Length: 168
Image 1 (tube, rainbow, N blue to C red):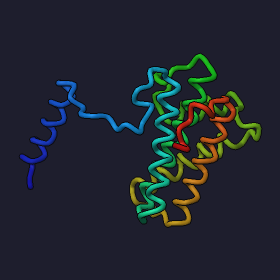
Image 2: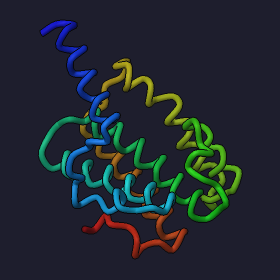
Image 3: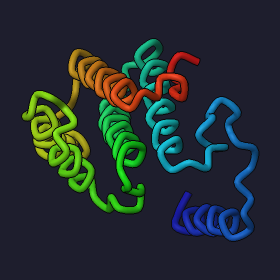
Image 4: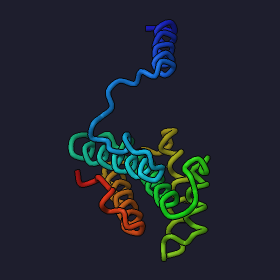
């Protein structure tokens, strides 16, 4: 194992992208067949939450649960914005853009919810990412629960229950 192995692996994935050779798609991910921008974001959120559910049942990989939960929250919020406004996913270049737009639109009737989630994300996500703080089981499960509730709220608010594949 050395630098040559890294270069070979990098060249391999670059060539796969260049050739358009992604291999067979995971059948269970309906969003991969979606062409609608909102459905793509919704499907990504559903997939991340599904992975959190699996991790919760069979591992103590708490950092993955936390990271996927943060991502699922953001994808759920972005789904709502694209679904219910004239926004496109490409309008959101940073994490802050999504949270700022959600807060500006007062999507949560409790005005502080979006800001509190964003502040929490801003302060703590990088602390976990850079291993300053280490999430334990209770925190990881709490983050997953928060992600599930945000997702459920966004789907219901957008009246998109029939398009959400979390129960599949």
